[in-house]
Length: 408
Image: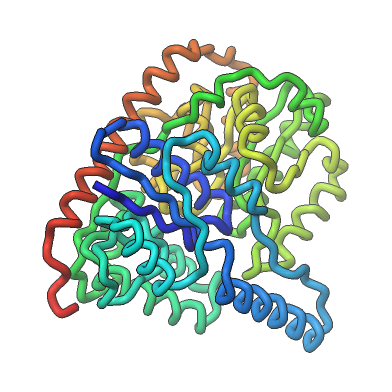
């Protein structure tokens, strides 16, 4: 079987790149003799060029009309994407094409692909190859104030297409499946979830001395690896850390992830002002988007990885999956979707409760961190990777053989 993995919709953000890595590695690790994995990266071509220019022009004009100076949109570099997806180390076929369903269909024909898995965009009811869609979450239904009316309407149209056009849709949690059934009518695609994706790459366990020093991080620190979106609630974590820092002059909090939230451009500057006002700018190390191996090297040695989010599509978020795979302690907000991984989480705290988070951090600081041998973690990783890959392959076979959704 020849499986294509279209990367459109994933390569513009760190969590999406992680999702692709897990998908690619899990399928390749199966070592099925008749399985070919084709990774399709839309990073060149005339359509992409024009869209990038138009996007930058829209922001430029918007800045001029509103008198603002918001930065022009950026994205992870081509090198960052290639290294993160393992283009030079993984036994998969990598293709670089233009954006759009037409270029994608042409590549499918050229390489005679059987099915596409994990499409982040609807490909249309008449796309000539079987495909599996992807839906992350329904945050816009729970927190409509985070989205303007145009964005909410666009999201509604996206959801309606994604549950009706493909033959199947991968969803990241049972909570997301229930939300789809609650909020979207006309579901014709099969809605399915996959096993926990706590599947580290083997190179994560290679020691990389000097990473802490490179980023100005001391030996004792907590870590948050989230984009700086309002829903991730860094403000709650910073408030909890402020109290912890008063009692411990050396403890640090390390934050990785994109600092831009286009919906709330003043959110990150507000966080910076809070740190400045409480003399925490050097104690809270905001590193931005850093290479994955550097992030992992820091996560391996932190006191605990914190997930203060008020909403997730993936149980715990991908950063908690990474922490679980590394055997690192975790402190996670007590929301229903995060309870789906209860047996792997070290501590929960009530959502948006900075005092409770402070207490959980203090407990983690006082407790000796258990050390799990790398051999044990790698064995668990291989087991989870195989379970995840087998589930994906089974879904791919089922999707390639079943009839399209009725009415398409």
